[in-house]
Image 1 (cartoon, rainbow, N blue to C red):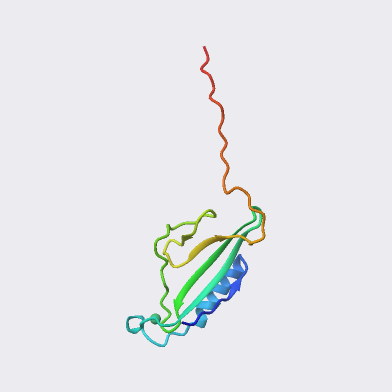
Image 2 (spheres, helix red, strand yellow):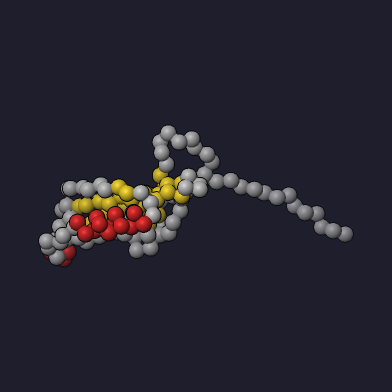
Length: 119
Ligand SMILES: [Zn+2]
């Protein structure tokens, strides 16, 4: 198994880096005839600067035929609380944080008191 791990920052740079990574894969065999023995992995990072949240965006393709791998068993969508996939399942969207960063509560709950009925 071969693995390429290019990493890019968020925004248009990540999209351009993903497209550049895809362009590096030159299929030498049809997917139907391939046993997918070698893989290429892209990892991009997205940052929500106002909230300090980070998201790893990971995609895997066969290095020989170019077929994309689908992530299985995760919900589709976007969450900064749990891993998910893109709607087609071809990108893993995994919330990450720097190891040394101070950890705050993942969520907060605010409960208002009951308002008594007026007479
Ligand atoms: Zn393949």
